[in-house]
Image (cartoon, rainbow, N blue to C red):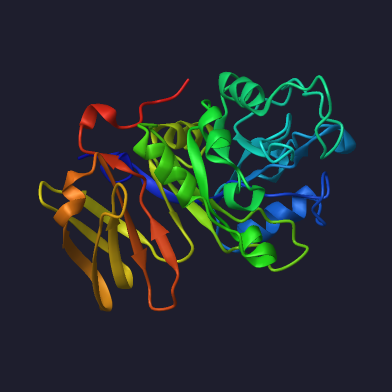
Amino acid sequence: MHDPAFTAPGHFWRGNLHTHSNRSDGVLPPEEVCRRYREEGYDFIALTDHFIGAYDYPIVDTHPFRTDGFTTILGAEVHSGAMENGELWHILAVGLPLNFAPSNSPGFLPIKGMETGPELAMRCREAGAFVALAHPEWGGLSLQDARSLEAAHAVEVYNHGCQIGADRAGGFWHLDRLLEEGRLLTLCATDDAHFTEPDHFGGWTMVKAEENTPEALLAALKKGQMYASTGPMMHDVTWGKDAVTVRCSPASTVIVQGSGSATAATHGNAMAEAELPYGRVSQSKWMRLTVIDGMGKRAWTNPVWQDVNQCPKPAL
């Protein structure tokens, strides 16, 4: 099995893919948001303000806030159409051009004549963006909603703002159901920071690329060259024939998950390396790995597929 995050050349860069400023409903100006992430040791962020008419459809130009060791990717959280629960779609689009055409989305309520969420997501992908289902647990996405977003590259499986403000941070239920249906998806963790509460520096994505440039990072995201974390670091993951081996920052638990209820786990104190036999997880078409440290913080690999030909391919 093959995980490009640990086989591709390059270096891991720490970034936040979901962030807001006072160009929408955040409280800090874009320059200050970038400064705070840079000072916290991040390598990059995507400023993803809400792309609705009430905020003049912002795709914030963050070029001026890049430095030698810190870069930015342009993007937005886009909205159009109603989900099954009647609420407006929230879709993360990282890597949008500045001239991306607005949807007919005046506010946070669906209106007649809007393009659907899946249609807007496809426009984002065709424009070159990395597209993710944003905070599916918080938004109450149904399985049919998730199925319909065929343009998605990934599922946001941890959203720190939704954890802090709503205790609805997750996306694994949606991800695993789609994997079981054969969808080739990856995962990401984000802050969704607004700086209105302690919603920042809590979830991030480690992207493997040869350069810390917007172009290299975006290409790596589309190829699945990343893992997600709220704390632990993964140095290497090797998916062998009968077991997975992980080298990581000190961990107390390592779990491998597969289809249905299939899991295997090992536990210890400050484990820097662990080998975990698959057991009945070996019968799954896909697997993913979780590392948990002594504070309960987690890191997650992307799903890998038993058939190497089913691994996520470079996107449009």
